[in-house]
Image 1 (spheres, one colour):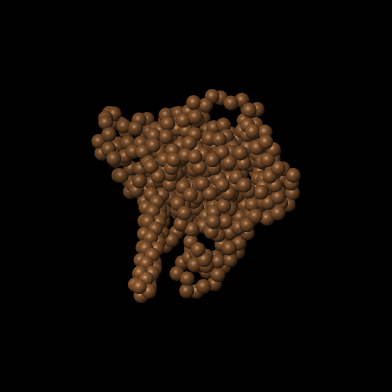
Image 2: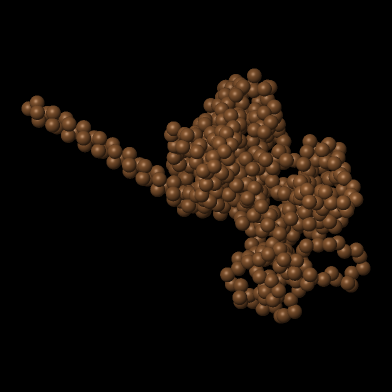
Length: 548
């Protein structure tokens, strides 16, 4: 009997061990399968295809230089225009679209910059106009044929307006999906800027550069912010940086015969204001399609706001704001490191906008940038993203490694290997834990620091303190008031409770409150600033965790 009991006991232990191993392997297989499926849905690239920020910027800039923008009288002339261009140049891509005021335009990508120059040599200025005409890289085309239906371009999609889908259409698309993680990916695909939108943004920057280099030959206009950091949404503003290009080419600098120029320094704020004042005047008078030019030179960072009618872009132009460009590179890098980051950021940003936590205009509320830093810090705590200092450390190690096949990205592989555990949580769990994490976070005494990847004591009594990763003496969320932080924490707690008490299929729709948003009436400005907490005891409890 003892022998039988021992055999049964050992056999039971073996069965239990085999069961645990099988269960673990099945879970691991399901997780890996979901990771592959989700990453394919969001278009995640493999690590070997990682494109550094500088390379991406250079690729898009060269792409913009090979593009022309042409105004058509009617979209039915596309075939005639395409056939006309094929007689002189090689066409790579063609993107017809409607502007907000229903004008017809075509963005055409050619094979080379020489092809662009060839079309410029063919084009002529009108001679029957009694006024001064400015130089331009833009074109218009008039067909001599009768208007006829499009035949050879049936496969060409015509884009229009570049507006986010209406809430009811987003709601319908989410209703067809059962998984919350899949819904977050679908929401990301609905909100992200399209390839044509990105092309037009870089073309707009190249167009401004074209005009300014006629006066200032060493000027370059570069997009930054949401247009290039990977987190831009349809309809977001285009931030442009106007900076001088410095070259140490000794063959040129040591020549004896040089141009005698007027040097314009841009180091001081007053010098930047004078320069932007001139640029704003040139843009208003000389660049076609530019309207609503506003010179906001008294701001902390002087800018020129304008609207490009031909590319549907609301733009902000600044000078020498290099820290903003470095910040764009940092966010772009984080967005490339894990396929879950962008869907998570887009979902939380959408939730924040619907809850009126973020707004289009700057003020004493949290911005999309500060909210994104909160998400990045949370993912650092979850061992999904490295800190800025860790990135710097591993990049330097990779550059010193002569055996590294790709020094630009090998640092990430090294960092991944250094982590003791791998986080494979799905998007649904990451979103749930995000709301839980910041619902109980000690904003009263602690500050967020993505540079070190940990929270630190505050440097002052600001309600919300997020260290600037490139200048730790600055707080990027200094504008947020106590009232707005109370509202933020209250909304985080409500979102956490919503996820606790909702089915997985309904949770995303409830969070972004699509149905209520379509029925919501106009709110007075003073009402928007009030906390949404209705329980006085709850309000006092939150205040105790936030305000000193």
